[in-house]
Image 1: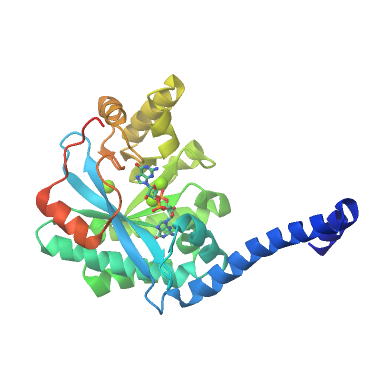
Image 2: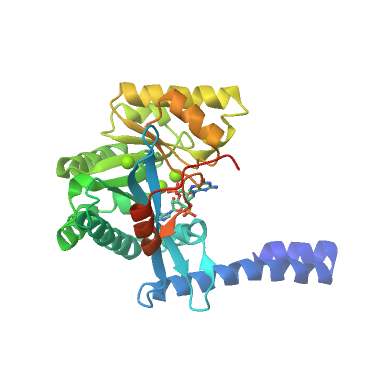
Length: 291
Ligand code: C2E
Ligand code: MG
Ligand code: MG
Ligand code: MG
C-alpha cells in the first residue's frame, strides 16, 4: 500500500497523496472496527433473527420460513449480513455465530410447532466454511437435541460454490445430513459455478431460483425460459423449487403458470421479527394485490 501511495504522491503532488491514503484508511478502519465489533457481538447479544415466510404458490399457505441474521450494534446501527457475513467467514467467527443461529432458530421454530404449526419447515443458511468444517455434524445434531426440533423439518441452504472447494467432501456432508432426514437447498441457484454438473451427484432436495432470474422474467424471454428450464429440470430430478425475491403479482402469476412450487419475497412478506411472524401465523398473510 505504501508503494502505491508513494507513486500517487510523486505523480500528483502532496494533496492527492493525502486524499488517497485517507480513503484507504477509512475502508481499513471500517473493517477493523467491524471485526472487533463482531468478536464481542455474540457475548453482547447484538445478533437477532428475522424470519421470512415461504409460501405454497398454488394454495397461498405458509409452508415454512427462512431465518436471516441481523446485527444491531451497541450504537443502534443495523449492519447488513452482506457486509458482515464475509468478514465472519474470513475470521472464522462464522462458526460460533452459525451455531448460535442454528440453535436459536430451531428453538423458535419448535415453539411454532408446539403452538400447532407442525407443518412448518425451517430453512437456515450455511456459509461454505460452516458447511465444510469438521464440526458441522456435531453442531447440527447438538442444535436438534437441545431444542427437540425434528430433523425432518430442517432445511439447510448452501450455495453451489461449496462444490468448487471439494466436491467429494460436499457430497459426503450432504449424504450425512440426508441420513438424518435434513433437507438440502441450493441457494441462489444459477448464479454460481457448476449448476448442472454437480446436481446429478448431489442429494439435493430443494432448488432456490436466484432473484435476478425472477426479477427479469417478465421483461426478458430468455430469463423466463431459464426459469422454466430450472423448474422442469428440478422436478424431473425429484427436487422441489422455490423462487426467491418475488416482488410483483406478475412474477407470481408467471411462476404459478410454470409450476414453481413455492414463493419467497416481499410480495408476501419481508423478513419479520419472531413476534411479528407469530401474529402473521395467527392472522394469515394478506392477499397480494397490484400496487
Ligand atoms: P439469501 O440467503 O439468498 O437470502 C435472501 C436475501 O434476499 C435476504 O437478504 C432477504 O432479506 C432478501 N429478500 C427476500 N425477499 C426479497 C425481495 O422480494 N426483494 C429483495 N430485493 N430482497 C429480498 P439479507 O437478509 O440481507 O441476507 C443476505 C444474505 O446474507 C443471505 O442471502 C445469506 O447469504 C446471508 N445470510 C443471512 N443470514 C445468514 C445466516 O444466518 N448465516 C449465514 N451463513 N448467512 C446468512
Ligand atoms: Mg421449503
Ligand atoms: Mg438463503
Ligand atoms: Mg438466496
